[in-house]
Image 1: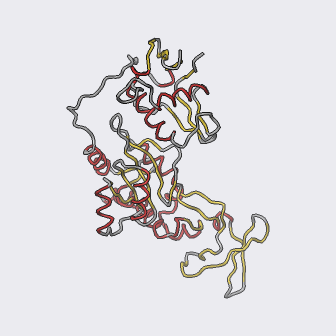
Image 2: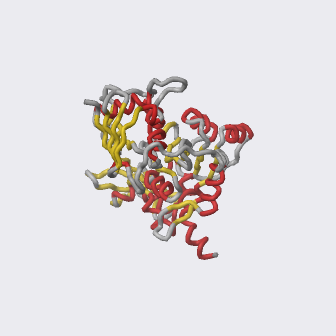
Length: 350
């Protein structure tokens, strides 16, 4: 047991140290002092910025800081005002490093069942890291927050009305207002310093008890297992992926579908794309047609571009997943093109 605690201490120390550093960014020389014997293991989770520190601690003395000056391009000096002496210092030591949050998010989501957010959007110090899809039609987001908890809950409330999990660097007292908001908005608050540990390969992962707690928390918001689950409308072959599926519009209301040799012809009403109460196509069907006009891609330059497409795209994905019986998201985000692309082949009507 003692060995296990020792093995995991560098992860906890990284989060507690980061929580004490403004914006979780400081010089590498300062990180080295703060992390002490855990520095080498924690360093792989730090990433350099384009900034250079204006001062650095001197030889392990936190109380003594020396000014940093650029003597010539890529050559830096530290200056001691007391002795009026200067000396060169490695550029890496004066470079400002921050936590590599993208890598941390990748590591935690990979082993916890959360699908990574394509954009990792940050709004007022709240990052959307990923989303859990424990059952068709249910999406529970995972956030990291670094600001005041009240601001965090307000921001998350503006983004989603679904139950959520929010991570903070360390545990802080919760006042009655935040406690009530957390309960009303169905949130689970966790501290990175308490719920993470290193893996054998020195990745960062949730502890097993916390994974069980997250699962139990999300399960309370799902229908009972006895509830009727609608069978997929398309006879998708076993182990079929989105890349093996081709959808071709025959006209504005009908498509031809091919998947690993299985072929079918479907009207939008058979695929779940009709409006409630009538047989007209809904906005998700129109979005699918917009994708088809560009052979599976949709960007801000596309004719059907709209700010409302984010939510429509989520519902389109849910309907396609239910129809084909495939749980993976069929539409991926393209950061380089600021748009989406279907993972299945998609052709417009003639």
